[in-house]
Length: 91
Image (cartoon, rainbow, N blue to C red; front, side, top):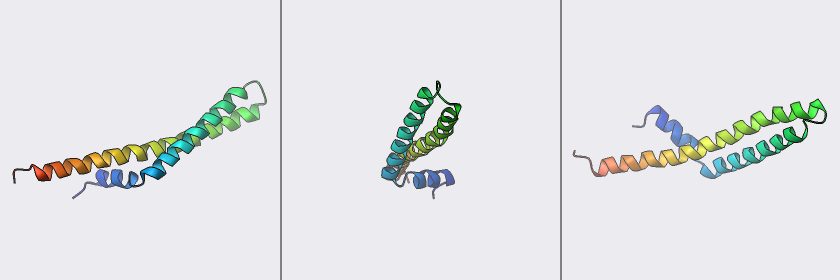
């Protein structure tokens, strides 16, 4: 029987392709917003605040994708350890 956190990890890591896509889109959006922040310092304040507002969601989207990638790898580790324990258990 899985514990609640194990089910959560397996659910988050169930679609690794989607997690990689989220991570990549969030990373690209973050770098675009960071570049906009860098170049908008000398111009109007509107562009600066807009880029800061775009930085936060793009960073969070990339982190969500990375958590999915990590959960996939960690979930596979949990499954492999359970197979190992079943194979070499003393019962």
